[in-house]
Image 1: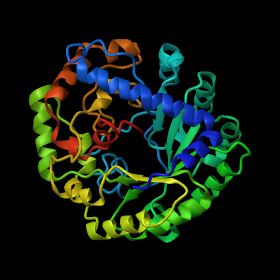
Image 2: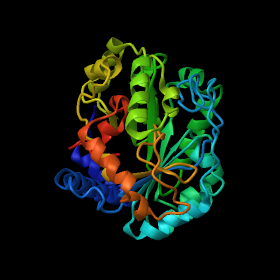
Image 3: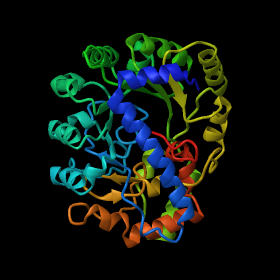
Length: 388
């Protein structure tokens, strides 16, 4: 949406050398992997090791945000058809990933639940520092102050903190007092002599679309480095039914995870476009971005089922391994109905280039699932947009 100048990028490099060095290296590797996947369709069981890992460290969270597909109004853990809540990830599995592939310095995305409630987070931070790997921590921001001693001396920790509006609007969605607590923790991170990169994830909702510009202004005032306007994953009943048939007919699996996404979105598209125009007409010292290349594309995302305006090739299947809190590897973290083996008893290589993953890659080359049009990975891992 707003791209800073080369001078600003150079300043980021000076300010955050560890993060920017790793990010540049990852972008180059990601581009090369995209090309490899396109030109080696006969080698889907010989894919080079993952460039990144997304670790679902736990399913525990102390917030109950209404839009959350886990604990929200229609979430799979709070709806009538509940799923069992998995335990947190076994520490042996985390160690295994580092020991087998850590020398390649992969990128890590840490999520949950709430990753800062993972009981071995301090040990994980130490491993990241030992292997000189960066981690993007997707957090609600409430527990940052418990780890200030760990954060201060570890430039490998990058924070993506969820805030969904100005004080009143955010707390309407996330709970009373959340905004003040999170803002206080952002200030603490930014008070370190060696500052850490902090991004804000703003999930676009009917309640907060009108304060998008004001939220950006407030976050810039806090000294954050990036604002990402997230889109809520939502499915229609028809998409959900098609997905169930696809997995039953083609994989012999009856899915359940998608039920947490079945809801209408209902964001005011005109107001979103107005807010975006207001943002674009101002000068900003940071990068403000959205998955959408044009604000008008929100209409396609919301109202045109099975339509992704940019891409339908899931490059992620050749670049990133997603690991559930149980240790099972899934090709799709948002819809983890398919699993290809557990890292509790198999190596990364055995699963990554195993028969199940190979067949899935071949299947995915030919077609997308009905739910794929609402997945951010098709936006993030498209050609020319292969970035976090």
